[in-house]
Image 1: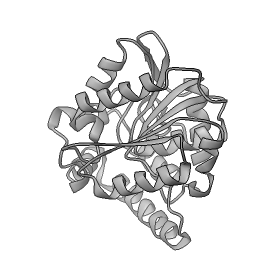
Image 2 (image 1 turned 30 degrees about the vertical axis):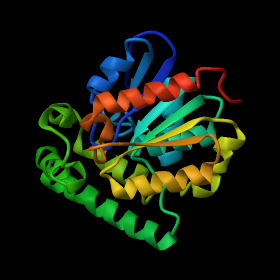
Image 3 (image 1 turned 90 degrees about the horizontal axis):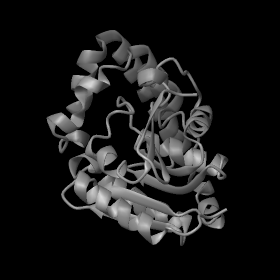
Length: 257
């Protein structure tokens, strides 16, 4: 079982963070949702208290399911990719699925090979320069330009290890991930409701979310949070939680099989 926290009571929501974060980086999102949900906040393999969990992408997804149990899964970026794999491999655990700034992977083999090379190089770079400097470089990317200092949760990210994060890059990075585009229709076939959330300013992932929704079919819904970028849930937490709550309320009946 992976490192995790359990807070609140009510219907279960399992939250899985992005790369270099930990289970304790959800900020006001977790505070709000814990008012009327049981939250299982998971440290993904290679991160936080799960730093020594050196797992392949499908095994990492399975470990998250073994930790979180049956419920609604909400994953951001890397965490979203893992939750998607879990929903496809173990549908008995995932009644509803919320993906934030996530993708099903790279369909083109050449693109995957290039990304694998880039992820390996980034892992080597991380090991060479150390965690503190790496986090400075990571958070300075344009992708995170809308993330304020408090929401960036830098002090908590320092609870990670270079070896754990390097393992995550090599084993659960986008290059190592088997593409899931062809499997997306399985979610509608199993009547699994899916909410695809992006920041409206994150053009790349908004296009990806719209494409995913078309591939999934009638159980998919897209929401673009105005004025937010890739980390929409941390840049605009109130709008994000409101969107998630509306979606959950509209799907409060029995989940799909």
